[in-house]
Length: 82
Image (cartoon, rainbow, N blue to C red; front, top):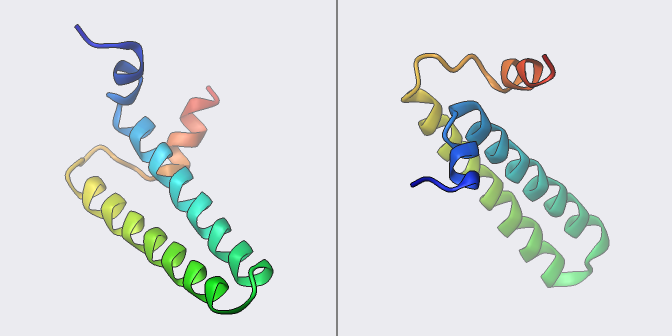
């Protein structure tokens, strides 16, 4: 028996959209920490969040290579509006 959350994550586009949202939040966090956190902690936070975002980008790239029907995140967002 599959729960409701798992059922919603079964389509590839939904998983891709969540991955892109996580990447966007990581990048926004990196920029915010670069401008608003002072000193060494700000630099380390920026680098850590930027590296996390880059790692998510690599994961998404590898994940999308395995799906021949994937046409990109823009297509997923447009199809959700229909």
